Image 1 (cartoon, rainbow, N blue to C red):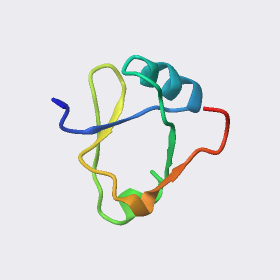
Image 2 (cartoon, rainbow, N blue to C red):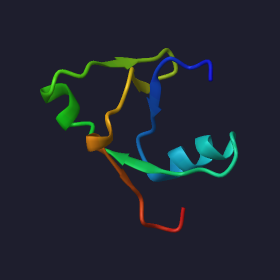
Image 3 (cartoon, one colour):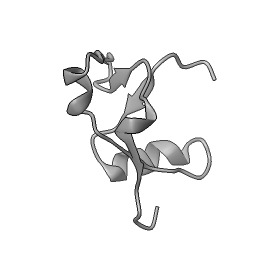
Image 4 (cartoon, one colour):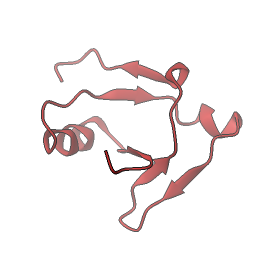
Length: 67
């Protein structure tokens, strides 16, 4: 892939729409509030999307809903 950062969506509906642009989406919950406390730096893109260079697995969980 050409992207250098993980792109974070503000809610499940947005993540699903964005994910469908690349196939069948898998929506993950990100413990984004904990990441800066542990030293991870977030960036804001020109279109308002939140970006982070990497998301360690300890901050991720898979959604159980019908996505």
